[in-house]
Image (cartoon, rainbow, N blue to C red):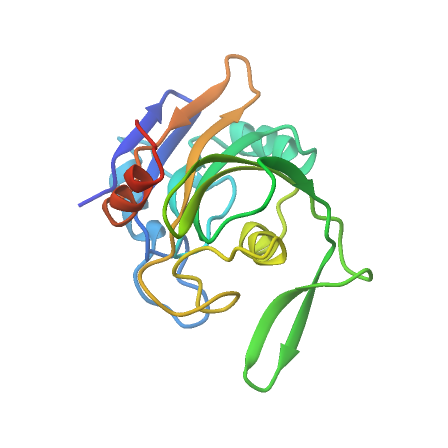
Length: 214
């Protein structure tokens, strides 16, 4: 069964990617969004193509291009930082302030136990705007707007704020599924490619406890 289609026209599809599904198989193989590409061609001979990536554990809006021309335009928009992206996260505790911007640079560090992204002045620029959407007894709902697209950026920046995302075993503590979703996206083509994803089932109770409605 293919994921829900949030947006569709001759240029693009926006899928509601389930949490836990990789966007492509990678060196280890396994199930991925690419398994659905034949069913998503809708009579075309080739495509679609990934316009960007989401972590396997992140759910929500994933943009696919249906033509090579659209793919080039979308990739240019992502590279230029022109794509508007909104993520929802449930974090442990919560920041002291109600809004702010994280500008902590990120660097990939590899050890025998694996790799992770770390805050390091020698790293690449990484900028995330954030605001508190609501608070619960021991958690907060953050609305995140990344201005850059570094690997694990939102996960590291939330941990850097002192409130790691629930379910993040790498930058926080092991627990339930990662409580991070790509809530909305707008790619500035003419006309725009835009979509909003519903919260995944595993995040809904925590979001309601923090006052979220959708």
